[in-house]
Image (tube, rainbow, N blue to C red; front, side, top):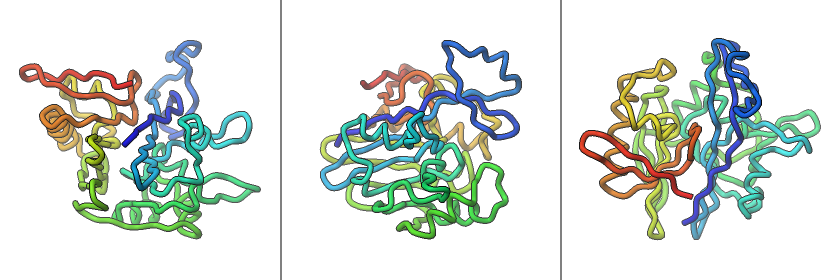
Length: 257
């Protein structure tokens, strides 16, 4: 099993929920008042049977009008048309924007041949139009011509791939565990989005249930340390893939390159 971070760069986002590219080397955070600064890292996993995308980023294009996610997959040595599974932790825009791409004025699935694995309750809420972090037009375009498999609760999607309902960051958030081909990989979406979140305990305002999310981070960190799981950090500002160790009551996270 091989795994790759498909980094899409850094962004600032304020109350308007617009994501504006931010270059830490040239841009001044003081020019973006009341903004949250995030990094976006979709992931690619190659197994013997599948090419898997984990969350799809913002769906932004590069200067050649090419979907950044597609180009990053090519940079990793693969063809976007060969993606067989797209597995979503949840459907907030910064994770689901790349599900579709604009072609000739119309939104179409970015991975038309792939099976899309989505939590049923998360999909229903996203389609309801009740949440400002969800873009209904993305889901409508996906529903029109892509294969979608809805899952609920906890279970095994296929041998070596498990999903668990977590529900800390948003009510129907889920996480994924990949245990195959001698590797153990954990993708926590926004329950464990950064390695730094293992280094100190805190309740985040951007989590629906901040206390639960905090407890889940510690639970996942301990499991990763004891069982040797590599963690994929979607919003990491430092390194996107790491291993976890415990030192007394504290965690230590080391990068995997």
